[in-house]
Image (cartoon, rainbow, N blue to C red; front, side, top):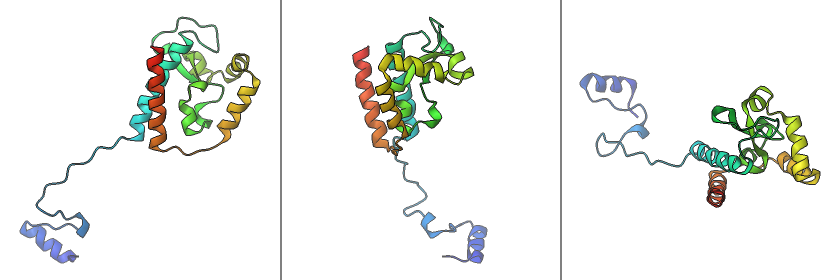
Length: 163
């Protein structure tokens, strides 16, 4: 590795050398093109859009937790019920069993209106299924890009059946 003095001399002579030998490029100053990989964030964004479409198809434009009907635009939201998104494991944040159409008031101002959402979900799917979802929620399973891609593929197939 060149000393500080030799790097200074190289800079003064117009031929700078990198500090670290691993930064040197062989065969000229051209960089290799960066290989684009599918990022987890990109997959999650696409997965969320597919989830929203499925939820709005299944549950319509009426708020699940209050009497608001014919929701449109930014007032029609996809909310996490009966638990907030912050306490759900990674993959369950995009689980359509826990997503429902909500108005902005219930989803944002009432923090999801969790109590009413829980009551309505118990009426809809029963206490036994709610207990199963709760047990599944308590398991922390790390998700990889493969898991996200599999979920996305599964939901895209479901969306095709819906539409």
